[in-house]
Length: 154
Image (cartoon, rainbow, N blue to C red):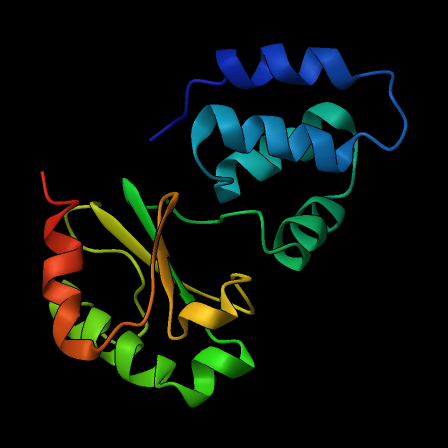
């Protein structure tokens, strides 16, 4: 299926004569399209006359870039030291089970939730902690996960 590149081309036009443009360009494209698909990155490489490997290298190096569509709600599980010793692994396992995520997947089939691990959420006194979108939930136990998720169901 061929992608409509009108919105993408409008963004590219703003960066044609700029040096050091790649990161802000990719950020703007991701904000517009939601993620950076292979097809999108190839189009950027061709139009901006940049090696495709450079585009892909930047997109895969920085964790802020997404190469697959993400769910409506982003769940961040803190894996920092305080959370780790307070059962962050149990919290993640409960999330995977409640979201019914298959092995190797982090987004639910209905595109409602995406689960991500992060190094630290800066809420050590609340360990273990997760963030759903911009809401923080701390001092969690695995049994509380279904109730937390219910707040974000349709």
